[in-house]
Image (cartoon, rainbow, N blue to C red; front, side):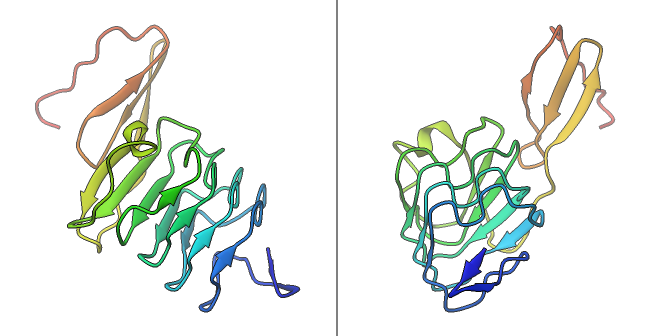
Length: 165
């Protein structure tokens, strides 16, 4: 990704950037974690679509996010440091994505948030990614945020978790 003609994107977007353009880092091989700078106001549509970003921290200054800005990656953890920004369309493309909003923030109801897994967090701790377990005929996924198995597929009809876990 370039800012004013200079290559800047290698997991770090410099302070002072106010807007990330549509498709700015689309399909680039990027780091798994990304912290966006305070002062950023908007993120364009499909800005990080198809990248390898697994975890993104979005500052309170972000007011608007374009449709599918973080789509194309299964299991994204998006940490929001402020109130819910306006979203043009959908934020994610996968049901295994997580939204973590800082305690006391507002605006996390209604579309498009109704289709997201939303949890509150303390603004400090980041969570590990969901853990996938292969089982005969499929896979199950365990969320470290709430300790719940969120999905299963394949021939899985029953899951037993030992009490010592």
